[in-house]
Image 1: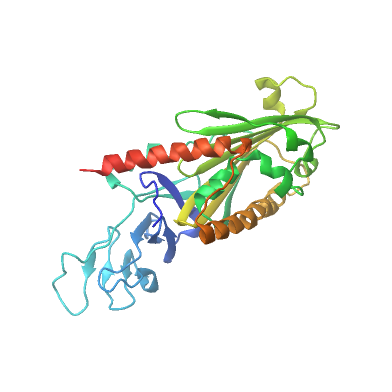
Image 2: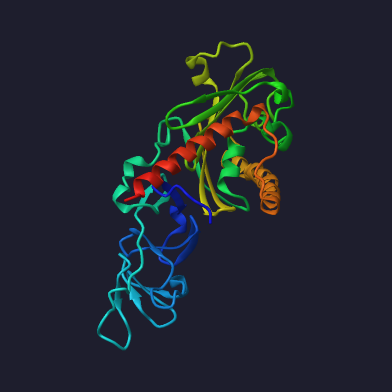
Length: 344
């Protein structure tokens, strides 16, 4: 069975997807049922009746109570059974787990670890969210047929973009540009400047510059499950100062990776940008770039199939693996610390 870092916040769903209906989603290899109370508060319960383990999502919502579709047992928002049809006494074991939730950044965040440690302040701050001059596009979702660590590897790897994403964000000129790697206590960053190049295909749609450009990509991973890819495009030959960068075309793409199981992942994404184009439907154009993530999905799903068939994760290591290797080591330290904390 796959092992996950549970004392962390994961995106369970976009806010718009949780309402007055029963939404079932497997998260960290556990069945989770989500819905909203009459007052709009989101609720998450283990999607498994305490009696015969029937998914509660096969039942129905009655006011703020979930009724099991098999024998009609009813559970309140805390997971406590409050009614057993045909008998007055409710068994002490008639309860299911409830999960802490926080609604923030238009998303529902879930905590599957120790409830006593579920501090909302541990949810990552999304920089520029709601700030003047920055636009947000959210609601992106894909189902990836690979484990989230494979996706994390990919999101720490600028080198693959030249070969996988030639139609969108790839740069042929970047193939030989080395990647610099930095590490802090909470994240790993792989970044590089590509100088004096033609704008990439997507930048050609939006660029306010004429001629050649300098472009920086910064791939940041915050274990266990958040990626932020920063990109900036400025006129070629300008100094790479904070002032010049602030005037450039800037995007920050966030990916929230929520494991369904050891080899399947819920892939949520949002993007912030500091530009718009008059008379151009930028949101539609950017959302169409969902195909970029699907290109990754095709490659990573193939990798997962071969890993499952061989039991081998990777046979050869090369220089571009430095950032993913640091990221994996950081995640292992987090997992080891959580295990040690859980021991009596």
